[in-house]
Length: 618
Image 1 (cartoon, rainbow, N blue to C red):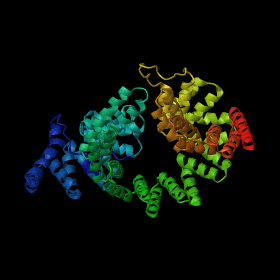
Image 2: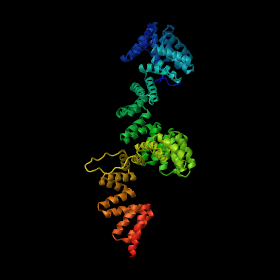
Image 3: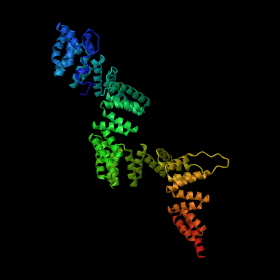
C-alpha cells in the first residue's frame, strides 16, 4: 500500500490525538489527552503530571487511566501502557480503545487491534475509523476500507480524508479531489501537494482548448503548492519553483529550488543548477549538479558531462555521461554517442547511439541513421530515420525527405518535408515552397516560403522576394522633386536575405538601389556580393566603377567575374583591351566570352575577335 501522508510511525498519524469535542466522551477521550500532553510539555513538569495521573488512575479515574496509558504509549513503554489502556477501555473510554488498538498493532496483533478500533469507531472516534480503514485496505478489502475511511473523513479527520482520497484516486474515482481538498484545508501538506498536482495536470490538459481555465487551474495549483511548501514539503517546493521559473520570476523560483534542494530533493538541486548556469554562474551550477548527480540524478550527471565537454575535458565528460546512463537516463547514452562522434570515434558513437535508440531515444535514432548514411548504408539508415520520425523527431522527418529526394522519389520526399514543415522545420518549409513553385501552386509556395523566411532561412527570404517581385511592375528612379517611394515588401525580403549573406539577394538589392538612383547603396551591396564570390556582383560593381571613370578597378572586378564564368565580363575586358590597343589580349578575352556565352554575347565577341584579327594582320 502507498504511503499515507508524511508519517514515520503509527504514533505520528494522530490516531489518538484528535480535536473533536462533540460529547462528554470526546472530552474524556482524545481531546483531553492531547491537551494534557501539550500542557506537560510546555511547563516542563512532565514527571509531576504523570504522577498526578498515575495517582488518579490508581484511584479508578477512567480519564486518568486513558491519558496515562497514552503518555506511556507515546514514550514507547508498551508494557506499562497496556494495563491502563485496557482498564480505561473496559470502562468505555473510546480514546483508550483506539490507543489500545495502536499498541496492539505495534506488537504485531493486527486483528486484535482492528477489534478495538472497531469498538472505538462505532463509538464515534474518527481516528479509530481512520486506523480501521487503513487496516482493511492493507488486507485488500477496499469496500470495508472505503466505508471506515469515509466515516473518519466525514467527521472532519484530516488523515481520514487524505486516506480516502488516496483510495479513490487509486480507483480513478472523481471524488478523490474533494477529499484531498478537505485534508489540505486542515493543513495536511501531502494532501495539499497532491491536490496541486491534480489541478496542474488538469490545467495542462485544458491548455489547448481553454487557456483561461488552464491559467486559473495553474494559479490554484500554485496556491496549494505554496501551502505544502511552506510546511516543508520538498516536492511541492520543487514544483512551485518550476511554475515561477516558467513565469519568469527567477529569483523566487531560485529560493524555492534552494529550499527543496537543501531538504534533499535532487531534482531541485539539478533545476537550481540550470537556473544558475543561465544566469552565468557556471561554478555554482556545477556545485549543485554535482550534489544531485552524486545522489543519482541522471539529468544532473548529463549537465555535468556537457559542462566538461564544452571545456574540452572529454574524459571527465565521458565519466559523467556514463554515470547518467547508469542512473537510467537514456540521454547519457545519446550524449556519449555525440561525444565519441565529435572525436571521430565512429564505432563507439554508433554503439551508444544504438543503445539509446533501442531505448526509444528518437534523436539518437536520427543520429544513428545519419551515421549509417554517411558510412554508405542508406538502406540501414532508412528504418532508423522512420523510427525517429514516427516518434516525433522533426529532423528525422526532414532527413527522410532528403533520402527520398536522393532516390528521385519526389512524392514521398514531399510528404516527409510537409510533415517536418508542419512541425516548424525551417528548411523543410523551404523545400515544400520550392516544390510548390515547381508545381505552379504559387499560393501554397508563398505560404511555406513565408514560414521558412520567418524562421531565418535566407534562401526562403530570397525566393519569397522573387515571387513578390514578379507580381509588381518595374519602377524607375523618381522624377526630379518627387519623394522617394517607400520600399516594397519584396525589397524588404531581399534585404533580409542580403543581410544574412545571400549573394543573389545582395546583387538584387544593389540593382533595386541603382534603379532608384542610389548608386552608393548599389555599390555597397555589389561589393559585398562580389567579395563573397558573386560573379554578377563583381560584374555590376565593375559597371558602376567604369561609369564613374574608374576603369582600372572596374577591370579588376570584371577579371574576377570573367574567371568565375561571366561571359559579359569577358566581353567588357575584350573591349577595354581593344581600346588600349592590346589586340592579342582583346582576342583572348573574346575567345573566353564566346566560350561562356550567352548567345548574344558570344556573337558580339566573335565579331569583335574577327575585327581585331583583321587589324592584327593588316
